Length: 509
Ligand code: NAD
Image (tube, rainbow, N blue to C red; front, side):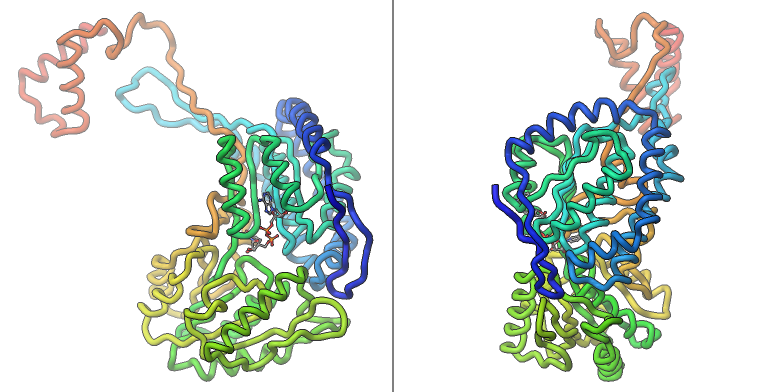
């Protein structure tokens, strides 16, 4: 196994190196995790939650220090690290502290009349060892939130952070150690994609993967070999639709923040902006002015550096392709600063769907804008993508907003807002089409780390049931009557049929 170089992407400074976890160590970690699961999964929920609450308090007390490490690892702005990595994580923990007991408690299910005399309910049991494989763009929260959800549900967890953000991997390891989590309940596996592949070969009981579509497909194929359930949180090409009757100032501010926060490296960033023709020129001008006002690479910067050199190459490839096909750059479009991976926030127009910048995930500080004439055209353009993660609709007409929202093919829709649904811990989060499979956050986010076991119970004092052996003509008649009575014309049975049914019923009694 190799060595990962740790580099501050904002300055290019070399921070050290980290050895990848060896295949033997991955196997050992799995054995230890299985043992730890037996202890952890059998603890009462209240005891598990005590550990989780301690974790929250530790994160709160060390918020700035943790954020600073993530900044060094990714080049993002400190405020963004505090907001999206730390605040989001502790808010989720608080949500589960309040709700886990009610989400995980057994749920009674109505028993139909055909099963009269029985009781039915569902219990939620942990699955075992969960592998959480995470990306580099929000390396703390995208590893922590699924890991914490899996832990609350009673699973042991093996986290495989991205090789692009190894410092945060070390940080996560340290946090759990400092909090005094029971041994081996959470272990961190360091390394790149081969290490991720090895982790899957070690056969976890569930895989929670966040990353690109290309890797997601490989993870799903590898998981299929062992029939391991997978949740996939993948990429996006999110549309923002601005109608002429929207609050244009709010929409312009949102477009700029939604496209450039985290240097555009957000799965649900605004990657395509569609504006109604009658306000197009005005709106483009508003977006351009706001983009040009952003501060870069200063003490108090608004846009941090990009994180991954290869991602910056993709941004430049998409821009070159767009320019060649006729797009016009209104502002930005170049690398900036002497060190690191800074790229100017870029606004471009005269774009169309033949360009990579409008059809592939760019994942950088780039905002292409395109006009539309009708509601139908806006919906068609928004849905003209294999992705379906987030989306936003901007109009003061609530009816129109709901009508358009109902036709957008995405797992998440914001109305007069941007990216925000992920921040409500009670809302399920995930994509449709290529953007993923499964949901996390909210009650679903906890239950997706559980086996849902259905139970049915009979008092056990009856010798035989109507559907058991030996079969007879009377049974056949009784079942036929029952079908007609319950699912057909109801009480429109003939007198003879009613009589026969009554006889059957009395006999059974
Ligand atoms: P990536 O797919 O390259 O890597 C993600 C993680 O998977 C890394 O830890 C990597 O080492 C590991 N990995 C890669 N190939 C693997 C394999 N075959 N088997 C096992 N593990 C493997 O993605 P990335 O570049 O780190 O992240 C950016 C992508 O993630 C973007 O497409 C972005 O949209 C997406 N993303 C999605 C969400 C979401 O919630 N839907 C959130 C953040 C990022």
